[in-house]
Length: 77
Image 1 (spheres, rainbow, N blue to C red):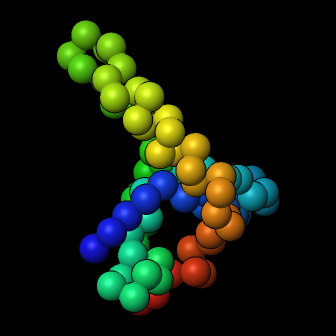
Image 2: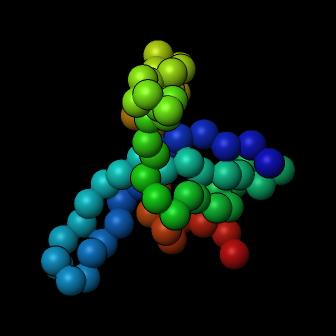
Image 3: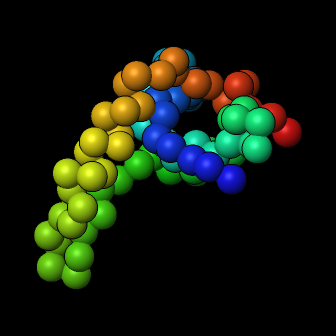
């Protein structure tokens, strides 16, 4: 199963507003969105709080801007 970062739009009923976050999205063999991470993407750090792989992480997250925004309705069951 392949994955990448994607922008996702959610509705927060308590606040009656939409918000957008970047999540890890996993795809079926056919390339259709299948699952997404429960929490938004974060930058990894080591035990000293130093970001590692920062350039790679930011480049991969930046690629999410090249694709259409997804919503939970875009995912297969």
